[in-house]
Length: 297
Length: 195
Image (cartoon, rainbow over all chains, first blue to last red; front, side, top):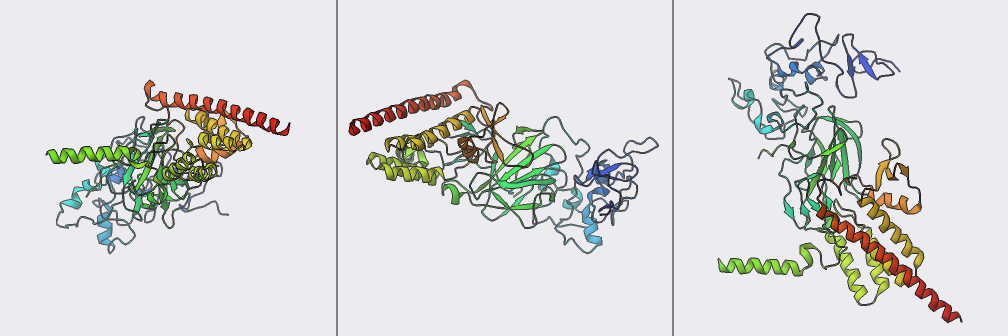
């Protein structure tokens, strides 16, 4: 097999990294293993200050590997992304509209420059589709309509169902830390989000699908596991994998990865349909609530 | 206003009388919100009260096969052990008693789930040692669901919240003693019959 893969660069068999000369690229994580650099002093090497994507020193070709190419490990070139082109919306306009599932203006300023926060980051505006770039909302002579669908978000958190957190009902409460069955006092170590059976379930964060299993032994309820580049391990329960989603799939925050299952088939009609999210950060279970953005109705 | 209050009080009373809004009976083995499981448990309890042990056993075993959300349906194992004992089936009685024992050890964090190697199905460990008994292997299939968290019983808890666990341990000890007694009694009855 050729040692040259998608990037066209030789892959080191031991580290599994692609050698671009200036730095190494991880095909598995879709990012550089070190920040970009220049020989001459520069505050943000090879960045175009009008392009927030270029400020991310770990992102490969502005997070557009389909259209972009990198020759030496420094390039930020992407199709249609010349100086002055800020968001994907311009690419859509220039190239006849977006038909590949990406919505206009969906590329957000990055938080990748701090890849491994010591504490879980609070929800960011960038993670909330409601706070899309101003260029998109206000227009500048090229008015772009507000998307009528979920927008993909490369670097932030997304709401997995586009709905609110489950409150308390006959089946208990959906919040993190809720008590499960006082008889033995287990604690709910996840958060539940309401939705409709059969609806799309979205990746809460960009990462790799690490495995797809079952939430419970001998049960039809599935659990999709997502690992992020910055140390989060996310379990999304009660969603069957969408077509094309399998272990090893690279998915972006906000991308539809599953289909919501019916918990009522399993436990009865008193518990409303919902999905269960559990998040570990560097191996420790954390509360998902501060991370998951509110729905944008 | 008065009518609304009467309605709310009536609703609360009817809710309590229908066994804690979701469970159909007040059996300690019921689990909040697990409607299908609870229905079978309560059918079993009703069958027991009619002294129909076989039917009760069928219902309890069916219930133990049902999924409940975010809380394993392990509370029933002691009950099943007790019914097996009254039917004189002690092999099964002690087997289910052992399931109950492992469930308690799991809920106390003494026994934990983890995969033998990365990506493999989880199994039970105690003090870093893999538990290989038939009962442990069986219980790994009950307790090691991906939604369950090994620390769910200890996270953010106060001393008071350990009381139900302590009660469950006492209940298990009493049950073991009771099953031992039934076994001795049945054994001596059998001996008398043979004499």
